[in-house]
Amino acid sequence: MVRIGELSRRTGVHERLLRYYETQGLLWPERAPSGYRYYQESDVETVRRIRCLLSAGLNTQTIAAVLPCVRVKAGNLVPVCPEVIDDLRGQRERLTRAMEELQASRDLLDAVIAAAPLELVG
Image (cartoon, rainbow, N blue to C red; front, side, top):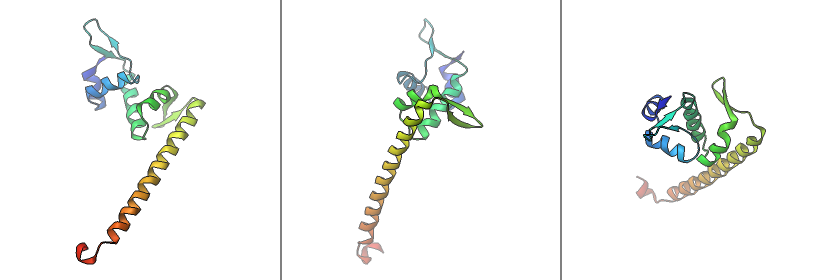
């Protein structure tokens, strides 16, 4: 069993964030009568998976659905449940749309900057 401070130290994730993951249904520590949280050794890897999925642009609601269906193979997360593939594809499409919107915004900003009088550009 690992206490929250040790889990934080081993994963580099602040204790407050670990408690947030618990409220989101991503971690399920046992509770001592004193209220202290105790995590399983496997939760170290679970937190690493959560961080990876967050870095991939997934929100905690999606991670809660996907987390039980991913394993680590050769250093990569691999889905092992066919039903999550559609969720992951949907998230990829969401990210693609967001990237396209950002590209359009940047192009518009470039046009505004390019239209500036030469004496302002310097």
